[in-house]
Length: 474
Picture 1 (cartoon, rainbow, N blue to C red):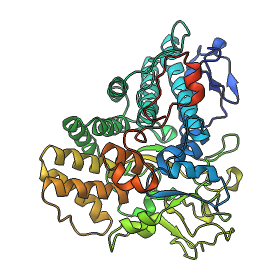
Picture 2 (picture 1 turned 180 degrees about the vertical axis):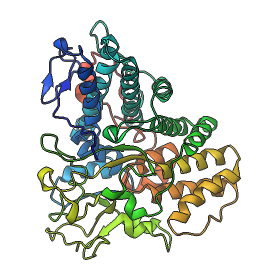
Picture 3 (picture 1 turned 90 degrees about the vertical axis):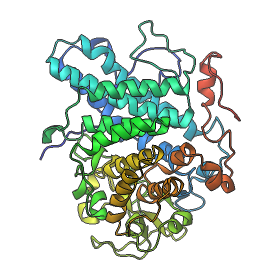
């Protein structure tokens, strides 16, 4: 069965704008002056957006610095002396000059630029109209995802709706509200065009369900609970279902299953490469580098009998269900790792590095159910909230929730998000979104009024010619 291969090595479409902060050149860049003339060009340009989803910047180290380690479920990992600078993200001592702060910023703008190349240039190509509209919709869906990342980490950022006609990228920051409204506009437009399914040859492209699913999550962050509920209810009616086997869900055999709403295809093939997402988190010197490991706080968060605990945390000395004995090659490393990224030895493709075939699950149906439950509870719809949290708990082999009041259900849903989505880069933004960050992260150094956001990188501030204002506290 053919898969769509997405890679950074195809090319990078870069607009020329001298030293502006979004003019960040990638390896293998291609001059666009003679590009965007054929249907094949349009396809290649769109594929270049997808390739970023599995890039180092989006899913390797920088994303883990800003979404993972600041939370209470993930710590640096590896051994104490390896990349000790990551500890700054665990104790909130990072500055506007830190590489992680800068690296994630740079990467997301590269991705936005790729999307804008398609959105601006593909409409001018003489090609099949239906395909043209679909590719533009895909680009809008992906641009919305990148802006969602930016606004959650940095707050308000400049909005570029396509490539600036005058080539001027020097703009002040838009407000957080304006950015969220822009994301909603992109996702709404994309959902109206995108198909619900694709043929096997195009597996991995974003769908109507992915656009609506992400939109429901965006509404949750906006605290527009009615729209979050209505949109997630629409997604629930689109045929998705929970994978009955939590272990299967994260193994290669479970890729693009019934629970997959938005998933990154990381297949490995000659000339395309894979992804380092699993390698950087793999068992230290057995399967990978051993970074971004589970904390004791996460260990303690699971209630007795929750099967997700042992299927989320991979331990030194255990034998996996697939028959691998877990044994680290570095005695100074910790003793547990993220099992969700584990790829069995029998399936590993060494041509692209360990775990390079491991797909990245950005949005799962379980998340949609919990979005729906949270929104329903905030609207006073206790029955819907209980129904959907219990669906998730049943798969985990737990009894139904005992929460009945709105306050108790709110806490139960937030707790369920923690254990269901553990180590999937949702914990820190969830704590900020729900106002719990100081409670859970205060002992780590989190400062209310400052650490909800990361600083705008120093070079971006300098290159803005005074148009940017820095986030509070930095």
